[in-house]
Image (cartoon, rainbow, N blue to C red; front, side):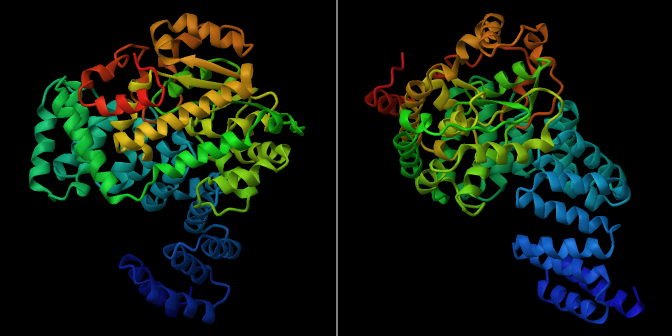
Length: 521
C-alpha cells in the first residue's frame, strides 16, 4: 500500500474504533478510487456494511477483499462471521480452517473466530483459539469472558470458575459474570449471595437492569433451601423481563393449534419422502428441562451415535423453503407453506446444512427441545428417523423453566400455564398421529432407574446395549445447554418433586393446569 493510502487506512481504522462509520465509508471509497486492486478498501466497506447489519452486502465486500488478497485473515474471519448469520455454516467452517494458522498473533481475530466456532457448536476448536487469544493479550475482559463461557462448554469448570472470580474482583458489580458463576456450583453458604446483594444495592434500581442478579440470587437461595427468598427473586426476574418484552403467548398457542390442524394422519401418509441420506437423524425433543440433554449424553456415548447438539437447522430449512427471512420465526402461515413442500427437499436441505458437524457415525442426534413442534415434518421427511420425546411431571417441568433466563414463554406463570396446555394438546396429537414412531421417555423413571430405562431405550432404537451408555457423566464431548454443568454428574433424583418446595407460590399455576385437564398429583 502506497504511503498516502496507508494514511487513509490509519484514519479509517481510528474511525472504526470510534464507530464513525461515515468516515470509514469515505476512506474506503477513496482507497477504492485510488487503488481498486487494494483489498483494504473492500475490507473497510465490509465493516461499514456489517455495522449497518447489511449481511449480504458485507459478505460481498469481504469476499472481494479475499479475492484481491487470499492471505487477508481478517477478511476471512469477518466473512465467516457473515456466513454464520446467513446460516452458511459449512462455508464458515471451511474459511476458518484455512485461515486459523494465520491468526497466531492476532488476539482480536482469534477471539472472533472462536466465537464463530462456538456459535456453530464447534466448541473444542473455539477453546483453542480463545485460549491463544488470552495468552497473547491477557487481562482483556471480553476475551476472558468468552474463554470462561467456552470453558463451561468443554467441561473445564474449574478454569471457568477461576476466570469469573478474577473478572468479578475487577468489576464486582458485573451482573452477567455473577450469574454465570452462580450456575457453576451448588451454593454451600451465602458468601456469593452477599456479593450479589451488594452489587444490587449499589447498582441501577430499575428492575429490568437487574435481571441477571435476580436469577443468580434465586438460584443460590434455592441451593441453600431458602425457598421464599429464591422464589421472590425468580419472580422479580421474570416480572422484569416481562415488563420490557413484547412476547404474546397467544402467538405460540395459535402456532401449535395450526400444527395440529395441518399435520394430520392423512397429511403424514400422503406423498411420503423418498429422500435417501447417508446418515440417520435421532431427534430428541420435549419441553426444556425435561431430560433432553441427559438423554443426548446417554445415547451419544454409544459407538454408533454422535451428537450434533442443539441446532436451529430444521427451522432454518422450513423458513428457507417458505422464502421467509432468517429473522422471522415460524408462523402459522409458514407452517401451511411448509406442509405442501416435497418432504424429500426438506430432508436433503437439512442433510446438506448439517454435514459440517458430522463424523463417521451412522446416527447423529439433533437435540433441540423446540423441535417438538415439527415432529410431523420430521416423520414425513425421514421415514427412518428416530424420534424421542421426553416427558416430566408438569409442575416440575414448569417450575424448572420458570427459574431460568432462557425461555420466552416462562417469564410469567400465566403465560407458562397457557403454553403448557397448548403443548400438552400438541403432544397428545403427536402420540395419536405418530404412534410407535415416537418413543416416549419419562424423566423421573430415567433418573431413578437409569440402567433399566437405558436398556429399554436402546432396544426401542434397535441398538445393541453398550456399558458406556451408563457412564454418560464421562462423556467428554462439549455441551452448550442450560444443563451443561449438571449432566457432567451422575444421574440423580434431587430435582424430582422439586416444585413442592414452592407449592404455595405455584398455586395459581397449578390451578390453571388442573382447570385445563392436567393431572398434577
